Amino acid sequence: MRIKICGLFRGEDIDFVNEARPDYIGFVFAQSSRQVSAPLAQHLRFRLADGIVPVGVFVNAPIAMITELYHNGIISAAQLHGNEDDSYIVQLKKLSETRIREKKTQAIKVIKTVFPASTGSWLKSIPANADYILIDSGAGSGKTFDWKKLSSVKFKKPWFLAGGVSPKNIKEAMTLNPFAIDVSSGAETDGIKDREKILQLVKTVRQGNI
Image 1 (cartoon, rainbow, N blue to C red):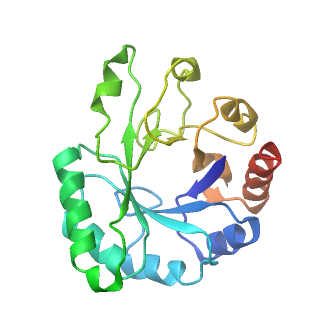
Image 2: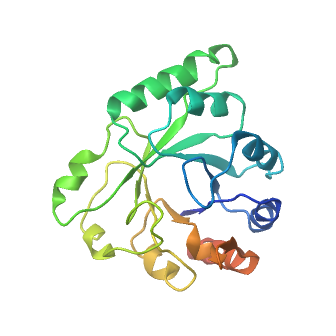
């Protein structure tokens, strides 16, 4: 099982994750209290330790914006929280790969966010061309949803669990056996990333993999 710490926007945040060594981190480019600009994300990215995958978080962003960040080495994957459909994802992958074909670099990896509803119809909204899916309670809500909805679902793609995961409930989240757990507000104190919480969250996931 893997873990992602999302919403980094300070130099200290990078120091914390470099120490804790999660698998992924997230830079939020959509409107948010954690939003970063491209120059800031670039500064933070090149302080990031090798082996930690930087993910850009977007909501209905222009494809050119995402591909530029990818080509500049600022992000390695795109997490889409808006109305992006399969045609958007196909175009994003095509443009991200075409421009750098000489380097034999793969197309950008795409994580598509979906929000579970009371019926099973929400599963039909998962784009076929996404590499991963992320199950969330709602954009930036920081609240959990009824995780029991997922207990009988057999996903066809590796999936991330997000929405209100914290040191208090991460062990329960792990029982669902997601590909990865995504934590943002649960790794914070008063809206700021908390070193001890990040260390604890990553340690819990690592111990669960033993």
